[in-house]
Image (cartoon, rainbow, N blue to C red; front, side, top):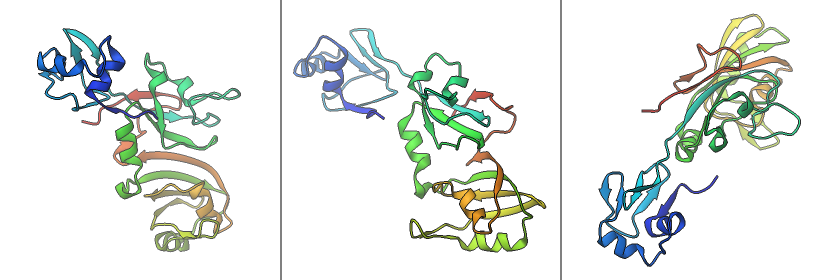
Length: 228
């Protein structure tokens, strides 16, 4: 993912006929406008979604894009794949090639996938410190018992990484179905947690990430949303 912040003089040299050294005079003559205000320094930062004008001509007017998709089974969480349909193939958007995926799902896992062109936002919600809850509906091969609730809350040791999972909240929905809330996303974590009980996960569906929910979206459907 490319850096979304650069110095004004570098930005001008990359997007116009003027050089880095020319930018000082352009600033002094108030010919550069950044988000409606005359630029004040050659070193001021230009971020991905700032509107920049030079002599009345727009050099950048990017808009942030946020999309949620209800991923069907058998779709790859990737932007390109030579053999399989990707989540990006399901989206009809003029700027879809600018999007990246926030929090991938396995090939057979269904549910909420987030896509954006806003690298700062995707990094923020992916940070472990954010402790953003991810909720899954799980269908299992064996009955779920009350013991699972206690063990998941205490955390499960993964020997390969030498870590113990953070406390997770499990709700028993029916004999073979559960609803699980996690604040982390280790490799195949849900399947491995139920694997502690030798209980195979037959179906896995991500319902939500934080306050963002897939509710109302049919399988394969997507919609844009705002973070404001």
